[in-house]
Length: 259
Image (tube, rainbow, N blue to C red):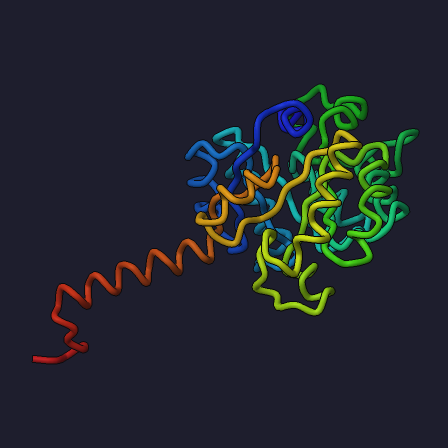
């Protein structure tokens, strides 16, 4: 876990996979392919606590660090994800420095924060300490509204914030645009650049979940240090559509049961 947090600050861009379907097997496959990190989405994904736990266990087989996007900044949700083995959390809809302070506090044990002691799974390996956890756990906050973008400098400057993940869909919605807008689209661009600048000043990593592999290069060129190259729902949909189209072409376009 220390490696991920350090890499966010000092390393090259980290390329990940984003999982929204509750599947330990899919998590294990992604974890064995060589991604720098795997995201488990419990905010918008179809993943409950039991599924998240099994996916974290599957990822530990390959040693790939997992970032869990929690449903909210509620401390119990953050603590449960970390206790279950996440290397860090992604906290959505952060709009003020005060909210960022709350998120960081939920990731750190007293006296640095307010995380409750209960590392059920983490303690299995032995030697787990509050100091180790405070050193290793990554706290990434999402800036994804006009209000959050306007407060980006204050949010990024909060001690203990390790990264800012931009949410282009919600940002575009808050600006009167469509949720299909990408990070680099015109509706978002005037608000996105100041976020990058604020993170650079604060020495904080910045990233985004790319809507497709075709967007990854543009996101990296924009300065993302944390980006997804694969999303399970979109990847499965595209692969299935391609396979079906190939099969239809091979069959001459015949419908099922046609002679």
